[in-house]
Image (cartoon, rainbow, N blue to C red; front, side):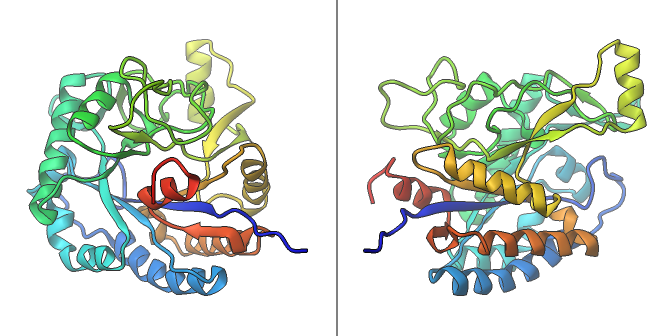
Length: 331
């Protein structure tokens, strides 16, 4: 007697960004990483579909915020410059959404500040991004994420009010972690250690908790994660010494496609076995596609996913379809 495995949604989340973080605001460079990623994922779409026997779809979260506006003279630059590519992705039934960093140019310091500590500025950046998205698609984005896997109560309330439906800023089990030693940041990194291990609609007063009686509004998709050993750089060690804070021996990291394939494959096994209705997310930023060695690792990781014993049950899909497969919404 044979049994049929329940389908497992797999969300490939691609942050479409410039080829760097604190970029030269005077260099209107093309996003070569995205151009290469679009080519590679077009090929991968066919390979994934052949392996699992059903069509494969991805989620592209595109930067549109003041850093893009100031450097490229329009927050909608990516949507305008790569209009054909995004129209093609939409025609292939991929999810195209919005990704926002609250970069603010500091003239006195002659640098970008990723300004999470300034809620008014965060709100401004989100409104700018939504307006840029609307210019191309004539609708608001359904899917959204903030930079650095950051969010807070005020931000969730805003994106919900803007009728965004799927949010990807949280990471399963992620504890408070300092921002990277490079660059300039404000604000406090979030603590996601107590969020549910499933997609959920957040409570109106506490986005870390599921709503008890609520049938509309935004869905939070916590991203799949694993615990990794910390090997801090000399800058991070110096920072910890200066702050008299010992570096933690481990930290929580989401499933990045450019990571070492062996431990990532083991983490996939854990993610599939620890929840009643499993799903997987894998994340990658387009700047990784500017490096041939990273492209090779991404390909190896996706090949490893397809070699998993449960691969025939995997559905490479979009957020609304994932919710239907998991039984959270009607078909």
